[in-house]
Length: 627
Image 1 (cartoon, rainbow, N blue to C red):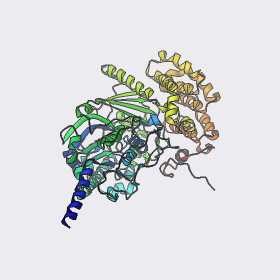
Image 2 (image 1 turned 45 degrees about the horizontal axis):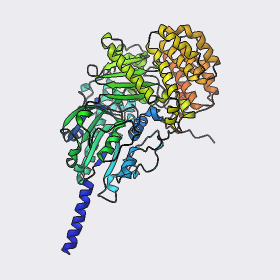
Image 3 (image 1 turned 60 degrees about the vertical axis):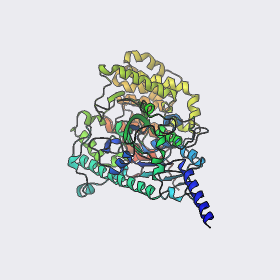
Image 4 (image 1 turned 120 degrees about the horizontal axis):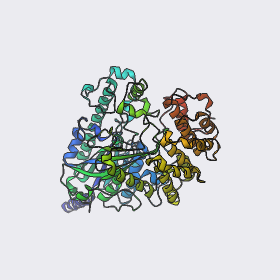
């Protein structure tokens, strides 16, 4: 009997040793939370003792970034380890799922294939086809505790939603009656915010939510400790993209991309980390790197098709990680609101390229403007009570921006025209151009084109059109040089047989505005006679921006007749721009009766008809047909 008991004890111990050979990995995400809101990272942030406790036994990453400032795009980047504009997952929310790159799976699938028990509790929000075998369970009840073999290593991903944007969609009654734990008077507002009681209250309420998240992080750690697996488990805590106060989520600034990242290192696996615990790391890491890091920690080969690279684990030297100083960001469509921006962080600088600079940051997005602070900000602007950085949110953007994020953490001082930073601007401009053309970046085509022709194999489409995309990017960058020097290139683009070259020629004219007046006649012809609807939209947009022609009849005709609902939405983006930001134009919304509709079109019509909060958040699914 003693021998039998000894054998059982030996086998149980052997299983424990086998499990300890491979670490568990837990990702804890807080929704809509940039590093600005935790005092662990940013002066004036909320106190988060449980997250700070992780840091004492781990690492703080000072320069961690989501590659996109919104949920579905950021989370798809996280799951695929690929840049969204390269694989067709850059639009929030999708009208059509992109297929995964050939031969590639979402990274938890590789962990599962190698013996890990994989669970997700529970948000996915992918813009790509998930494919089989990613999760053992993904639900509100998913947990590592359900694995039958307790010796199996596990990967668990958990999302806490208390900081989600919707948590700040409170009503006026709540604002007047509900008190916050954090004192609004003690809040330090960003430089671009108007200093009002409502903004202070909103910020304080968000700090309350951060501290709720902190408690939940502590509870998850406690469960791991209760199960006796804490010192076998890497715990990643991070935000899924930037913070939710205005100009955070949905915007490509630091406030939308710079996330908190703390990784607790388990005692039994400190040999996989080449630095002292409790330290702060300066190396740049972004969402494309998280999957490869998890795989490397688990001893699983990293697929060659991904864009990221590991920053922890076997054969990773932390001095090499800390030498990494760049991160790439992208912002395209957010629900029904279009724009096209790219960013490059390098060292202390962030360079932002606005390819549609005539679109204000504050352009209507129904979901954003559910927040009272957003509405108040716009009302103050319309009343003429804001100037400088507080008014800039509702005005056209420069075509390029350069910010020193150390000296100017809220990014209100654009250095792009400062001679002292001319060399830095030149270097970062060239680096970004090289990056978008090397991918290649699919967003140089409109979403309507990609939905129609690219989504079954986005990478193949990009590779097939790589030289064309490079040409389109070159045309787009004519907006960065002196107009007289740009004129020959613009003229060639407007006369091109390629519809997308004509489209970009019109867009460059819009970027120059009145300087491109000499092309008005040519663009008037394109607006009414071009064979391409998207060229008509972009030409009409220029005519409206410069006041040469009322663009709304042209746009309405396209909206009402096109068979493509995505193109109708692209045109409606321009309609809302002219109604809200150009006093000369007002459209009779009863004249808009789109022949083709999707959720985005419906949301734009809701807004134009005076019912911006009628529709639910955009789902990315096709609306049901009426019986």
